[in-house]
Image 1 (cartoon, rainbow, N blue to C red):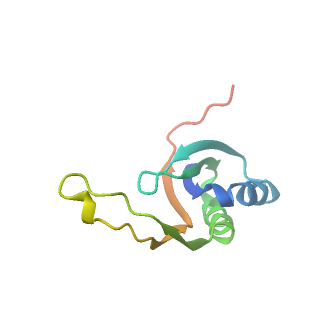
Image 2 (cartoon, helix red, strand yellow):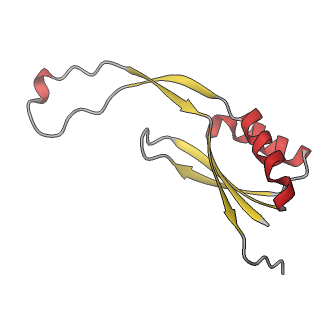
Length: 109
């Protein structure tokens, strides 16, 4: 048995949740916050049999697309902030960060 831990952007949360149910995966959905952009993320905890891990990863990949987003950089700490002009920077966001962990024991009470 494996635990699939997927951190995705909030925009993809409902779409992925529906797709997981459609493919008979049970998941726990947690609200989380990213460290880089300080934006909302959703973390899915999915327990599945070893033979279904590849299918689970494919469902995640198919439903979590990366996209370009403009963000305003944070002003520098220290130094002369008067000369700092914050121009928006285009960064890639979205997609999924996925960890697959072995499960030594599983109990359902």
